[in-house]
Image 1 (cartoon, rainbow, N blue to C red):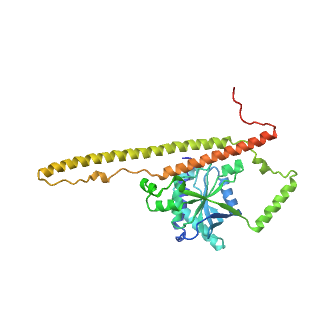
Image 2 (image 1 turned 120 degrees about the vertical axis):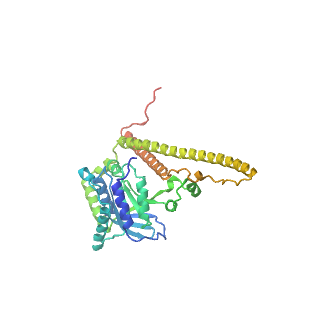
Image 3 (image 1 turned 60 degrees about the horizontal axis):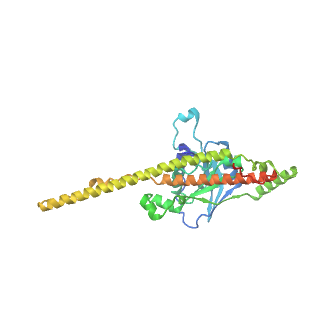
Amino acid sequence: RAGARDGHTSFVTMNFAASAGKPQDGSGTPLKAVQIDGQVVMKIVKHCTDHSPSLVTGQLLGLDIGATLEVTDCFPFPSAPVGPAADEEVDPDAGADYQLEMMRCLREINVDNNTVGWYQSTYLGSYYTEELIETFLAYQENIKRCVCIVYDPSRSAKQGTFSLKALRLTDRFYEIHKAGEFTFEKIADKSLSWSEIVTETPVTVRNSALAAAVFGELTASTLREEESGVVQSDLDRLHMSTNPFLERSLEFLSECMDDLASEQQKVAFYQRNVSRQQLQQAQWLQKRKQENAQRKASGLEALPEEDENAAKGVTEPSRLEGFLIANQVNQYVDQIQEFGQASLQKLYLVSGTQGVDNIAPRTPE
């Protein structure tokens, strides 16, 4: 499926999560916001943009204070080798050793070295994968309030939309999955829906007073140079071409709908097998009761009425993949709606400047 993360990077992340720090209790005030330093945002944007369209990931460092998770620093993870080097055997512990060494060096220069999560790049919002859930579960064994910062460089570069999100696993999903109860029956009992797996946490960007002063000076100098007060970045937001984004989003949505239909077929096949097995067990039990009635009439000992084959059962398909696909479909639909609204607003704006009253296409009479 589109947007799946690199297997090597995911393994390195989980390997490091298993070896980082002591477990935290996770009790206390619920997490309500994520505060990121402006320098950290610039590092994430540069790392993801420089390697686009390849998917990359990195470590988030900071402090967990009350209802706010402060992200004060970050560093990138080693990327998977490409070309001829990709065929060489990779040490599975090399990535974790590198990250632990980086945190050791940061501690020596008095930089926050507490792990609070990780960041990763994506392409057109394709981040709802099993690798994401597995990495979350690996991190939360030691860091209960970890977050994943997802950045989409394709949308930010071409549309002027700063696509940065902070994601967390919901407590209900984590408890159900940790207890090994992610089955049809347990999901129905807990009333867990597909939208309650991952939740988005509000993000705020914080700059120091010195950085804010520098930004103010740069903005003032730019406005003095421009007589109209309009800079190039303002004009980029009026770019009318969104067809590539709409086309790719529709293609990804079509693929997800095919995957969702496939998951539904698996569930339907499972239910048919369960019904068939229950029918066979009922027929076998009725036949055994008749046989025991005849043996009892003949003075013989009755046979056990427990079917040994009934204990085998039918393997239940995983519901996690279907839930993730449903989340991904919802993400693509929201993106398409956002693209459409932005395009319509730009079209109305441009038509107004050209004196066009009606932008609707004409229909043949």
